[in-house]
Image 1: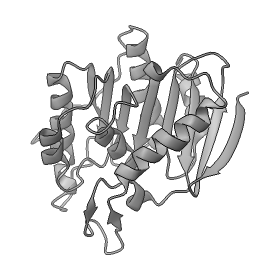
Image 2 (image 1 turned 45 degrees about the vertical axis):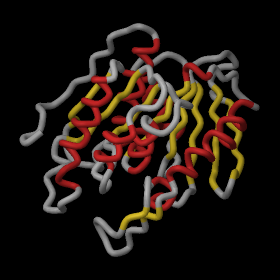
Image 3 (image 1 turned 45 degrees about the horizontal axis):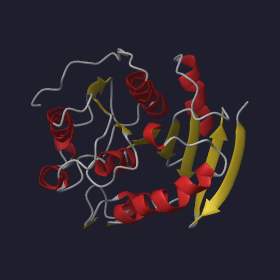
Image 4 (image 1 turned 180 degrees about the vertical axis):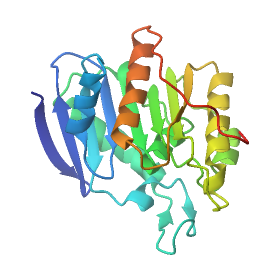
Length: 244
C-alpha cells in the first residue's frame, strides 16, 4: 500500500502517493475529482512499472487551466480567465518542491498527465516549460480557441522525451465550432511533436469525452513509461476520424 501525504498549497489539495522510496518515475496529475488510488490500480492492472504519483485537485478548473482569457465556449457559465501560466509556476515552485520532501525525484523522469482541461495543460506545457520531459494529454481540450496558432508560433520548449495524445473518436461530433475541431487540432499538435523528433503517440479511443477517463489516462501513462524504459508499448487505436 502506498504511503500517502496530503497538504493544501495555494488553496489546492496536493496528495503524494509514494509506492517506492527509490527514484522511480513521478507522475504529476491535475484532476477534477481526485482519483489517485484508481489510477495506480489501473496502472498495476496494466503491468506498468513502479511509479510514484502526485495529484492536484480542488482547484478552479476553467480559471486555472485555461492558457489565456476567453469568453464562453460551451455554456454561459464558462469562466476561462487564463490562469495556466501561473498554474505551471505553481507546479514548479510549490508542488514539485513539496513532492521532493517525500519522494526521491529524478527531474529526467517527471511526467505531467491530465484529462480534459488538464490534458490541455499538458499540451500547453509542451510549449511553455521543460519541467516535465514526459507528457500525457488524454482527451485534452485542445479545441481551446487559438491553441493551435499559439503552438505553431511559440514552438516546443526544451527537449521533451515523449508525448502521448489521445481523443475519443466521436468527441468532435459536435455542432460547436470549437469542439468540432478538436480531432484536427489534436492531430496537428501530434504532428508538431513528431516534426521536432519527439517520440509521439496519437491514439483514437472509442466513444466520447466522458468514456473511461481514468483508464484513458492510465493507457497514456503506460505508453510514456514504456518509452522511458526503451519499450515499444502498443496501445489499440480506432480509425482516424473523418476530416482529420
